[in-house]
Amino acid sequence: MLRIISIPKSAEINTLSVPSYYRLASAMLLPPPFKITPNRSGVFEHELYAVIEARAAGANDSEVRTLVLKLVDERISNYKNSKTKPQTIKKES
Image 1 (spheres, one colour):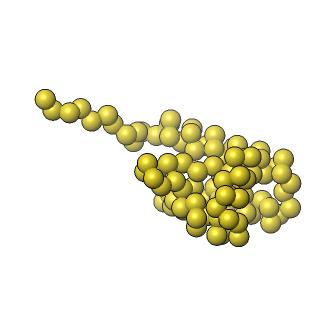
Image 2 (image 1 turned 135 degrees about the vertical axis):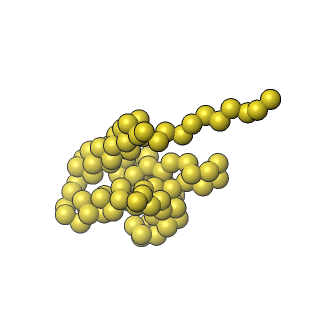
């Protein structure tokens, strides 16, 4: 099951401020957030913990960036290959 963590919670888990989380995510050193609703963003829990585990194992910025790019590629690929893509709902006239 996929779990989504809010950006404030993701920042707290990483002992960062929210602006620092966004700065590191824009540098691809943390998983970039995605929109859940127009006013709420989050990240997948498994992506966040994969980066934390890599850092704990001694990964440098280049290695973490490669990992984050791989995780984002997998996120996109999983969506594109999903059989349960959201369907467009046609309005009745």
